Length: 295
Ligand code: GUN
Image (cartoon, rainbow, N blue to C red; front, top):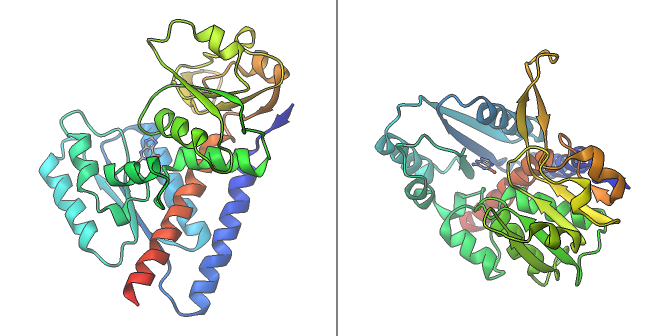
């Protein structure tokens, strides 16, 4: 069993980006500038956005954090988005999800300028991804593809089961892994809450991507020997013995699954850190595209 070490690979990628930023600086070029918008007080979201800003500082990017209270109106948020779209200093930005219930998420994502959409959530960028055109790939699926590629996990012709059909992870994963590309060429099945024969599918899978949001859902008796496991889940479980009052659990029951796996991502330290590294990679790409247009 080999650990797919997202902490290490993301650190390598951040080092690679830092070198490129240093080269930009040496040439007197503008460095990439990422903005992050967060609405409300969700603890996990605040932690994620904080980590994204910290990563910007680490690689030498400029960053701007924009925090709105929970009762911010949709119009107020859309006004800020318009401002970010037209502000030439900002190369890319993200609107952290989920948004409060009174705000229409689709409307917000549609308002983001597609050339600054480093999350890859705008319908134009989702379409470009599906058509295998150059675009910003959504950071979590992009990070998983990068992990599979850097560890040379065989995917060509393999049976992949993606559990979960979210727009952010499950759906794009299924599209990317079926494409003719690195870590692609797989035969992909998308399973979800209505799937009737899940265990039959997972027992036949060579690679399982679990992006369901149910702690420790995938158990050892649901998989075959030698499978590759990608665990996208990260749930806070109350635990009084921990100083912060909770522990983090993935969607995979690591104890029973890891011994049967050939490759597995741990939680934490697997997919999570990769997501941040790929967001930085997208922001660097946004800057280089903007630079091309400025010429
Ligand atoms: N919420 C959960 N994952 C993500 C992500 O990758 N980007 C944004 N903006 N929000 C998220």
